[in-house]
Length: 97
Image (cartoon, rainbow, N blue to C red):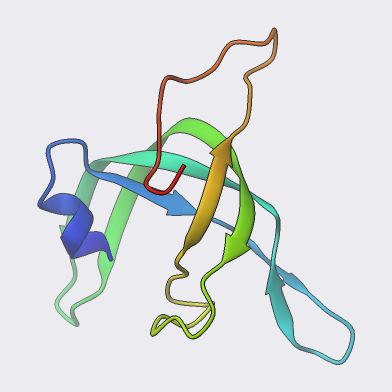
């Protein structure tokens, strides 16, 4: 996912925190944040260290069933940008919106 974002001029990715559910399973919070990768480096073992600058919050409307991406590595879905305080919108539009 990160490598795909780095190939674009905008370098945007969406981040969503997981939350613990009863029984020890994990789920995703319904609100995430679109961020621009402003700095990154690759470690010797192939991991990335990244710095994101937040652009806009969004609400997850639904997740794509049968996504090849696991919840801990990436999720496909539809999102709706959330208004900024004071009613301003970020100007971002996402696919499928």
